[in-house]
Length: 395
Image (cartoon, rainbow, N blue to C red; front, side, top):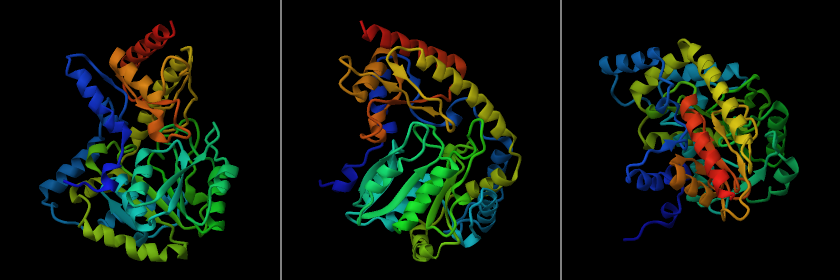
């Protein structure tokens, strides 16, 4: 029977590639999974006080439908967090979602029409492109310099009458680059000039190395900014699915969105109530685990970048945040494209990564993404296999 064109066209390369891994695994061979950014799958555990809050909520029978917009106390806690980062937001500007992905879905569903164009950094996190296309729009990649700064000439050249929004992911997935204050200011200024929304994803705001994170709120003023954030990464609550949308309270241009986006929240009833109670404790409870997590990740980042850059035919920049590297490969005569490289690597070694073209064909092609969440022993084994694979392929 007929399946809608918009559904059949949805792609999510990070999980789509697992079908190839299952075929490999069915032969009895071991796989080193470096494709999904889930720290809880490795040696990072949800903090005890957050687990206790979830259990406590369930045992107190807080298992009913919550307010569609989110638990009031959680919304207050979110306001406290984002206000410290400089974002202007009140309780009524916050909408709690089932993960950041639902927040992104609701945001794009609310602003994208057929033929609408949405600018996003190349490379970008795949759901940005998928949701835009699902709602009839067109994703348009803009160039980032190697240090993560936006190429403003390229951004301006791609704005036209069909443009509706500019997206920012900082720290970036897949590159780990972080927008600095100047880059954020440039994006906000150009968006304001052309009457465009800015969707800013700060999911990895607590995972930054050697510098203080600058949130978009520091430069927002009265611009129509939609901020996305959540609890999966920094608070190690990946499987619990809790995120949120914040609208810039200083922007009157968001009044219509402020009125209409909650309708989508009501249609899906509510976000998970026990998880929301735990999220309150995540924000207001001890934060010690974040420093420890960043320290461990920094060691692993430095190790994997050093190993990658020691392999002939591979080069890799040092990321400034998140837990991904996005090395470039010299394809030459050995592989047709980055997808063939990734599948050949999997079938030859059992190391599963993700092809860069899945993060945007214009600026992602010729790269592959590695998650460096595993401990050093696993990373060493994976890098040994990668090094041997590339070396034998060049002969």
